Length: 94
Image 1: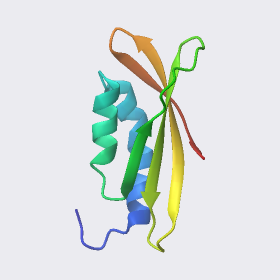
Image 2: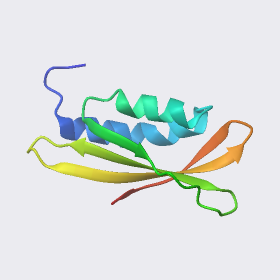
Image 3: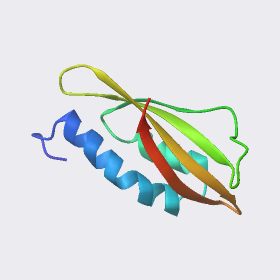
C-alpha cells in the first residue's frame, strides 16, 4: 500500500471491489473479514435479520473514516442464493 493513499481513496477502492468479493464469497463471514481488512473501515455490522424476499437478502452496515475525519456509513445489500452462494445487490449511503 502506498504511503500517499488517502482514506478517501481507500473507500473508493473498497466500493469498486465489493461486487466481485460478494459474488465470489462462500460465506457472510468471508465477506465481513474481507471488508474489515481495509484500513479505512472503522466497523462492520451484519444486520441481524434476513430480508424475506426472493431471493432473501442480508445487509452489512459499513462505517469508514475519511481524510477529513468524518465518518461515512454505507449499506451493502447481498442476495443469499443458498448453497453457499451470494450475489452483490447494492451499495448505498445510509
